[in-house]
Amino acid sequence: MNNLENACLLSCERWVDTFEKEIPEHTFSKEHNEKMKSLLSDNLIKYKPKLSKKTLKFILIAAIILSLAITVFATAKPAFEKYSFNKYSDHSEYEVLAPKKKAKKVKSLTVNYIPEDFEKTEIDESDYMFMYRYEKNDEFFYIEKIQLGGTTSINTEKYGSEKIKIGSLDAIYYQPEINIGGLLFNNSEYVYIVCGNISKEELVDVAQNIDNIL
Image 1 (cartoon, one colour):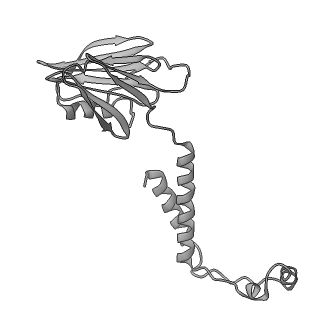
Image 2 (tube, helix red, strand yellow):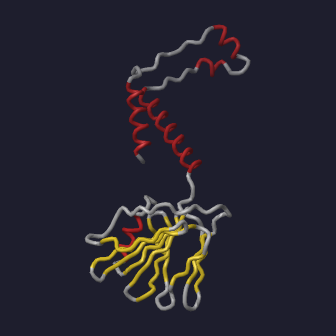
Image 3 (cartoon, helix red, strand yellow):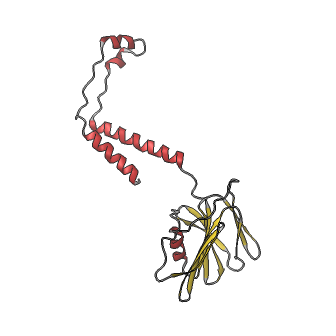
């Protein structure tokens, strides 16, 4: 349950706590009962269920949860676009199968996690792609943020690739060389590559903290 749901439920409970312990019984007027006889039986008219404070609280909470669930379902969008991943003898090609629409220009790249002691050593920015490279002694990694609409080629000639998850995103983990790994994925707006000679776990940690994609 997220913070919004918790806040709504807490507010609901506090509101219900202000109610009287027992809801007063309401007596319908004679005129009302006469008019309702044609629609309802006498037994239904005489039956006036009482709802306790606890029962009312559960009903209200259930209604709020249902309302939130419907809202989330109606507004949610896929975390990533479907893609094709075709393997050839010396490389593989990744293409996002998004509906035909104008691709967004790349305007920024936010990296919220950098492994300890790594420093940015290279920057390449354009409307099509942003690339940042980081180094520490003999270790390195780089991050690419690429505009949708093209085909991305990666080297999988010797070591192949596998599908993994980065949070809710589908990703491809590949090895262009024996001591180098890479991640390739999209968030429905851009394609991302995180590649270097750091561990697979560190690559995933970096990927999870790009542009607040998760």
